[in-house]
Amino acid sequence: MAKILDGKAVSQRVKNALKDETEKFVEKYGIKPGLAVVIVGDDPASRVYVNSKKKACAEIGYYSEEHALPESTTEGELLSLVEKLNGDEKIHGILVQLPLPKHINEEKIINAINPKKDVDAFHPVNVGKIMIGNFDFLPCTPAGVMELINEAGIDLTGKNCVVVGRSNIVGKPQAMLLLHKNATVTICHSKTKNIKEITKNADVLVAAVGRAQMFDGDYIKDGAVVIDVGMNRLENKKLVGDVDFESAAKKASCITPVPGGVGPMTIAMLMKNTLTAAKNAVLGK
Ligand SMILES: NC(=O)C1=CN([C@@H]2O[C@H](COP(=O)(O)OP(=O)(O)OC[C@H]3O[C@@H](n4cnc5c(N)ncnc54)[C@H](OP(=O)(O)O)[C@@H]3O)[C@@H](O)[C@H]2O)C=CC1
Ligand SMILES: Nc1nc(=O)c2c([nH]1)NC[C@@H]1CN(c3ccc(C(=O)N[C@@H](CCC(=O)O)C(=O)O)cc3)C=[N+]21
Image (tube, rainbow, N blue to C red; front, top):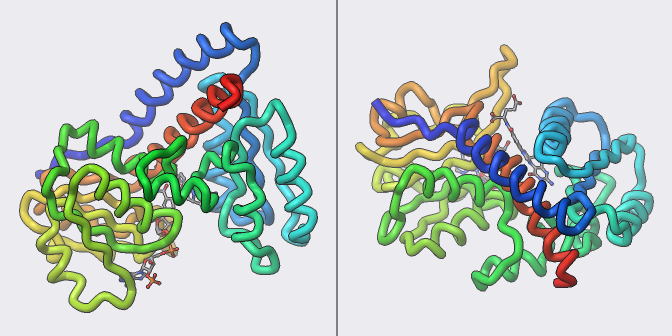
């Protein structure tokens, strides 16, 4: 049976360490790291994430603000809020929850966030820095995955890593971070032919597709490390990943559960980025 990579436990350790660091920061500079979370509309799933971000801020000792705007908010109104937060000294990190309503251009909003406050690392300046390998922030979900792999003591050098999914927020940056660790990386997507043949050769599989339980044991190589980024709500309200945990766990050496795997790590990495942003701000970086 596979070893379970416990994202809840690892994220708690990360948050505990951040709490200690934050106490020192507050003592030295007399200010708290501050995070603003902006949410437009009332998608219940988004609400859950926003609430857990708020809770994590309180736990670690950050200042946090929530801006919950109605679905009818215009692009101009959202841009004005982002501008206001860019200029607000109490705020070191800005997170605009995605997806945004269809009438708002996401790219425009992301581009408006001051890159120094872009704790999601979605701004083109930060995306470019990640590509080069010299960055302030790592995108939270891929960084959380790397932290879990690292905690498990897995060396990625020369390993065949397969990422399924190529979104700007998960798949693409994930592939880049694996590459930085000297893995041989394959990216699959909806136009990829014979996905199973590719994933069956993966020493490390990262599933980030958004298809409930797509990857069963047949997709997994014996002894593989299986990382499940997917978050899918079934009709019975149960939350499942992109991996069919029961059957994949029979083949894998290590596997992340959903819930309790990558999700909590995403929040922990957001918290880490917020402290980094606050430190850079006080140092005038
Ligand atoms: N744990 C966490 O913290 C987070 C979890 N998530 C979850 O991760 C999943 C992916 O999120 P995100 O990247 O934003 O999703 P997107 O919908 O933006 O991207 C999905 C990707 O999967 C590919 N894809 C879709 N169907 C298939 C298929 N049948 N075979 C192969 N590839 C396929 C798409 O290909 P193409 O490009 O060709 O369309 C696309 O690249 C979702 O379940 C989401 O809820 C997301 C963010 C954070
Ligand atoms: N600007 C922006 N940044 C994001 O990072 C971002 C976003 N928009 N939009 C939505 C996705 C999704 N996401 C998750 C974060 C935590 C959990 C998480 O903590 N999940 C818990 C379960 C939560 C539940 O029960 O629903 C777990 O896996 O254990 C999940 C998903 C961040 N995202």
